[in-house]
Amino acid sequence: MSGSDDTTAGAVQLSFIAGDSQADESRHQLSDACAAAMLHNTAAAAIQAAIEPTQRCRITALAMQFLDAGRLGPLTAAGRVVWRQGDTACLEATLRDGDGVLVAQATGTAVVNGAIPCPRRAQRPR
Image (cartoon, rainbow, N blue to C red):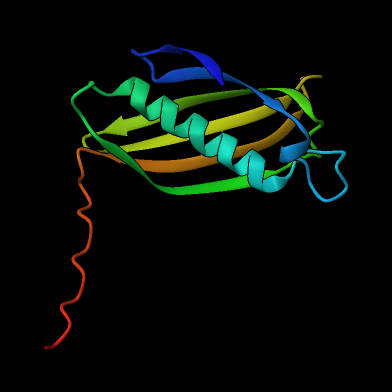
């Protein structure tokens, strides 16, 4: 994975190479699971590019649409922060194959600085 980012706008572009280990059962096209991981990584990179280095963030929701069977080989992903107010940000990411065909897209939400705390584990009775 390689990339460049525009930290003022929260926009990133990442490059991936999909080989046989990222293929579906037919071994001819990109698996949906691999495309989902690439979209998640791209959305995460976009919000990371938009926040201060000392801030933390977490993607809380990510909806994906798989539009075309991606071919193995080079893939390009683009992600950006569409909107941000306070601790909440809306993200989008796209994934294109080497021919420029849109393979998958995602939209999601992220929180910055742990606005949603991790739930405590229930204490077991002793």
